Image (tube, rainbow, N blue to C red):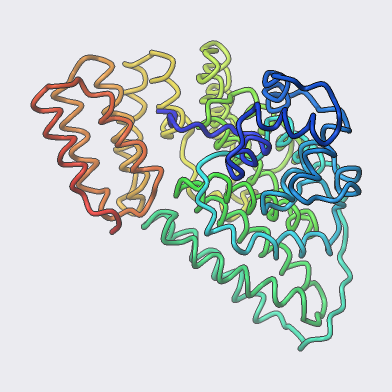
Length: 446
């Protein structure tokens, strides 16, 4: 059930979209401003959006056209400087507390960013992960001029984050996004203006990292993929400042899931591996079970059944030997990997429909009613599998069960999955037409 939206986009492609430029338009402006021979060479511009780095004169020509100074082009590698022309924070800056606060401030409007595609290339995402992994653990020492912040306020912020986790389980990401942003604004203000005692500043950076992680998840769940990347970038910065390795690893795993949904299994695997390498072989085996389970679906996207089965076996082994006392609080939702929706969906994609149905149905029996969004996603996956078995009646029956729950969930991801299922139904089949009409008439929000 991979989304059929074109999520993988290059910053230059987005800049062209903003300016209304074709590939030929870019070639013409580069030739006009630089004198390079670009006549009718739209293929060269196409290659720039698919991994080739333009010569410096071409980059300077594009920058001059959009009002970016040449020093920015020299300071930031391609295509990072292009992001400065699209209203997005560049991803290549020093990993300092000051930069973390700056990036957090810059993503405060990310919730209004409804772009349903990715800003980072696979290479850019890998470079960001590598940069995060290379940051040594540090102790921040910042002194502001505002009022003193005590442990009670830090504890309140941390408790608020856990409330948001559980609210998301009940309602979905769209509703939670604005709440997370408001709390992130509060923490950012405290970091900018406060004075601290003991480890309070460290805790606030940790809270900021978690809020950015959660805001990114909420944006992803709402289908705002560019916004999710921006929040996760800020979250990596804040969590690195706080020494929050597990939060940063969680962010990379979510970025990996996003890449899997976009159909880029290889980039997903690379991000998951970066997370593993940073946290090491010790620590929470539940976290390792999560990383391995999500890699199962990445292998399915790549059409690699043997590797998928191997990763699932390893994930379940981690689960069997987990010690809950070692788990970070945020992984409370994790279940046995075999019974997760991601794994079940992976086997649907691999064509192992009987296995997929067994795993998905077992997962449904063990899922609490408190996880309405997961219940809808699980039912949608089962309906897809039934459709693959040419069981139209059973698929529609399951899909109707999902739709009965969907009005309780504010999640663009859920809506996308149901709409993708509806598009797969046979045309001019009365029962299928009835379902499509029923889905079209649902209220747009709970």
